[in-house]
Image (cartoon, rainbow, N blue to C red; front, top):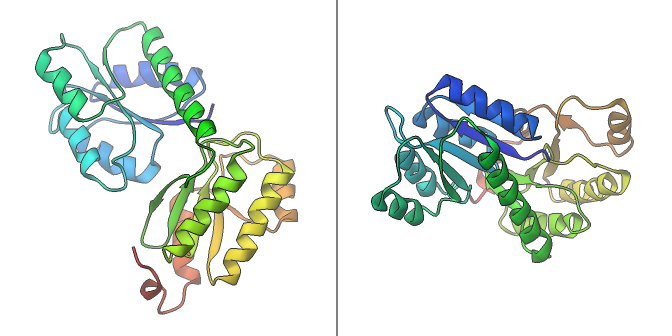
Length: 255
């Protein structure tokens, strides 16, 4: 599956239980123990889904959800909230106003949560395949933009090209492709990326890859044959843009 999930819960046992079961179901799970840390973590990993606890010290689940919805980079990330208490009309209204993807009762049996998460991603994949066009998900940093590929399908290449064109027209020259959700990277896909990168280099920019670790020997050989380098983290890839940039780099960015 490869989908990234951020779990925010102050209870260590709950974090272990949920992350273990989601991990066993094939998801890549990051965890943190408080709302403020969760908001910061979300900006680091940019997950496909955030699961958060209703009751937490410092910042409760609804406050975390509000912070995320107010952030231009994070506002579209889907949220599922877990509660240990009985639901009430006020909480249900809040969940609706914050456009939560789910509001579930906590339970030691993880079956319902796993099913809801699976149903959610199945619907998201269906929407992606039916869309056919439009920019892929991306978020911007000072050094450039990060484009997220949810998976590789026949629709991915034209939509990737469209996204690169969209960002270039917005004066974003440097981009990182987050391919950590993609399992079936093949020669055709990398050949396409190599072509996009050559074009971007001609525009005085670059495209870098962030891949899931570890990298197989065959994939590494394939990357080398396409002259594509990969990075272990988004931060590493973005930081490299600064090292390679000229003095007026920031003046060329309109973000």
